[in-house]
Length: 193
Image 1 (tube, helix red, strand yellow):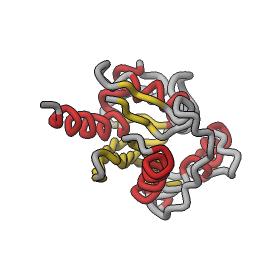
Image 2: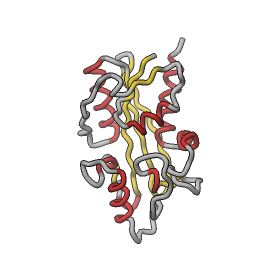
Image 3: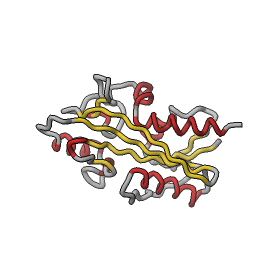
Image 4: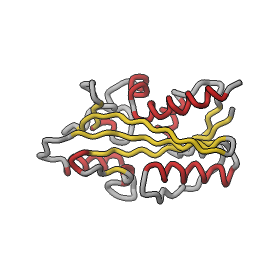
């Protein structure tokens, strides 16, 4: 089965492709020649995931899924949340986003946070939603050079390393995206005759 993952983010695509069994042909937006920047105008992660998945199905007619992920920090009332990718501005710089967050948490005792991924799947004229959450804490400095986004400053619950320090296989087993993808793949496998 061909399935489009509605993303231009190469790192995210690699991470997700590692989770998808080989009997699925996973395509990115680039693979289907979609070079549009799909605007995430939703006020929730769910809305943004739906917007991206709907764009692909409406313009390309291909079965697809899209995700939106937010980092929600307790002491910041859930910020950056829906603005996670553009927290420090529209340039969407991971470095700038992390620096802004670390500055805002300076001298704060409560560094608890969680990542939440929501996936919208458009398949067979139906939409299905899946979500994954991982709790953790924000470190006081960047550690590790793996992963992407906020990975160098997020330490998942039960681990002494940040996502950026963990091997991809470990991260995929415990991460928000890995958990949401697990639910999506379980649903897709159940469809097989």
